[in-house]
Image 1 (cartoon, rainbow, N blue to C red):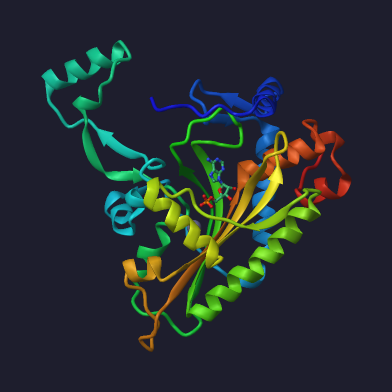
Image 2: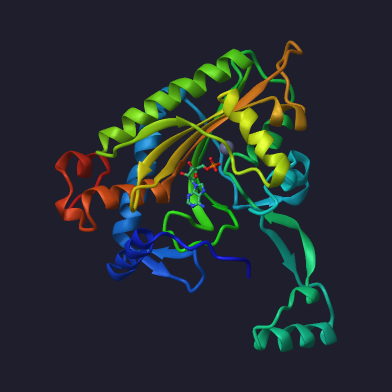
Length: 311
Ligand code: AMP
Ligand code: ZN
């Protein structure tokens, strides 16, 4: 098991309170929790609110499982930029003797990785990843491009932590725009501003900032600097537990990163660009619980109504 990042005292105290109230159900592994009914009601309420905010996008609805062909992850360069966050699926393919050896090691909770083989699958690291190859398959894009709504699917990030806002498996509510560059950039900017309003309307002290992805290693620091300089990533930040601001939503302009990888082009042969936005549904829920309290009955009426919290 990799190193567990310790949350601050406030973050750990918040986690304890959430578990105590049955909002989160611990699994024994940091960053992996079950969810109680109240937590889930808020999370689904936020999801539905994003759906309502997206009506004018008239987005195509697509849904994908939380696993991705590893060939797709390999093609995007994810393992260069974020090897530390990736999770791959290994599965047993041996015979009787190997099965015995596997069970033997597993029954003592020893390392049994030597008894399994790499499968064709990895865990999906961001909800938009399956969309690019799926759209590429259709051939060149009509002039208006496409907008895809992938819903709020599970994604995996290997970053075990005792901060309840840093999960290993969580729901990312994503929308994706693929079209000619100016259209994509304008869409990203419009959603970014709309999302700040949306989150503030729920009573969150949400602030927008330029951001960078947690690129791996020394080369990664340069990538992060250039990403910031070009304002390719914005995050909406809110306090969850203690003073550190946490990113609750992200707005990413990928330029031609995915469109060149998967060869997505416009019908007239010009370049297509892509952008995506992702709300971290658990983080928005945790920020709301931190702001309005752990008892949903006491939340402001307007917020309860917006989230469809009845009874
Ligand atoms: P990213 O693709 O890293 O920008 O993530 C999109 C959104 O997912 C972020 O704005 C967060 O709200 C959320 N998120 C990212 N990493 C985590 C995590 N480890 N635990 C919970 N939510 C996360
Ligand atoms: Zn995305």
